[in-house]
Length: 583
Image (tube, rainbow, N blue to C red; front, side, top):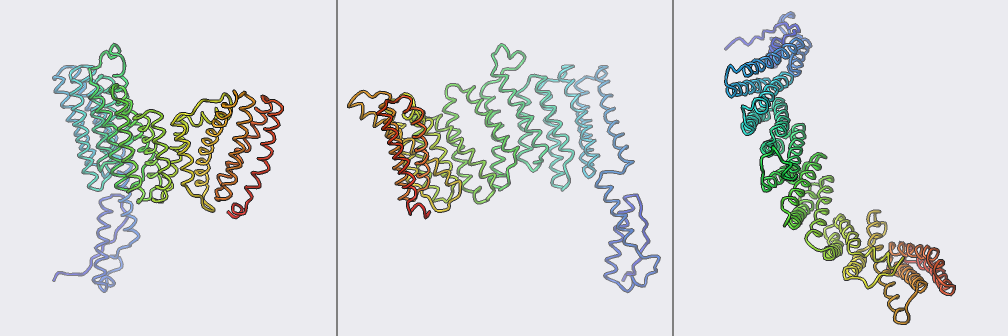
């Protein structure tokens, strides 16, 4: 059996990382041996025992030096190595300028040289400073070479430059995957990938091959957004580069043909494919990470989806003029359905408020857009009115107040687009409009039905009170407008009504509505009806001052004052009924 006596060496703090790590390993061996043979450790000479504080200080110094990347002296060595790499690039540039070798050969050598520095950066991944400097050296070698070969010397086509850049980005991606799976920060990938994106934007502008380099950027954007290399810095920079390139591509090819001099012809279908890909990448990312993975969406992702979707809509509208409206409408409808399914399915179960709110806002806006793009304003208003009525029982069944919120929004939009609000304003002030259209009547009925179907409870939150108040206001506007127009129509059977007749009839309609709302609201314990009754009373008083007293005759003015006075006496009494006071 081998001698198990523990031999412990005295360790002094060293500045050399290797010696410190060796001491750390020795300290671990001592601890294991002490657990196994405590008596022998106690018997060991005092001078041979390890001082734990010295070992800890030495190990901490070594780890700190390794994590920081290098020692103070090594920083200068790294900068010197990077400068040597730049010097080698200038040597290749001089060879190319002197035509000592064919420029294609020099370009190949420069590409291999840049790739070599990228590999050196990946091998130095544990030292962040070294990886950053070597990766920056690599991209600083590649970028001028591609620029000069494709722009200055013309020795390389735009396609060749794009292939070189794609291959370089692919190598950086492979190295990045190795770093990620090796649990090491992918510093070299971050620097090389971001530099490649910037070079692609520059070459896209300089070579006028915008479509080619936009495709390269889209591929890089897909890698940065959908792969395990999903780093915040890389995502943001590559996405912004892809956005800028795609928007520039669409802008250039929407110009007149005479202003597209120097740009290769690109079909509208190809540009549409670019726009679709630019939107599909963040959309798929949101579906994977936010919907399926239940991760909280960041602000940049939200903005990126909206920016790319706006570009897609613009591209469809411009390059598909014959069917662009219908195509956008169908797209909005499909996205709205998918958004609602995701919001009230996995997102609601996940309970992430931001994700749910963003998807509901997107879905509501998309549904409104699809409604008006696929139908006439009147038909679209009726559809919104139906959705508003359905939203109340659906919200109660699903216990989702957000559904009623959206239903109220649909009702307000329908009241505006159908002409109900403008018709109500015309019946209560100014020139009396004619017979209302069918859309106005239907939306007025929808507003009344939506409020009647809903229920008010004691002590309900402020949001629900606001919803019910808005619904009651829309319903009251519709009822008052139709009642006023009906009274004027009945008066027309007797005589042609003048302005003073119309003023009295308007006051009568407002007073009747105010009293009816106060009485019904008190009996049914509907607080919002009583509040709208007071609003109608206030409107009648304002109308008395600015219309009846200004346009009416004495006898008609007296009638208007009498009606308003009775309403002022009746509404507060009705509102103080016991059923309502106990609410």
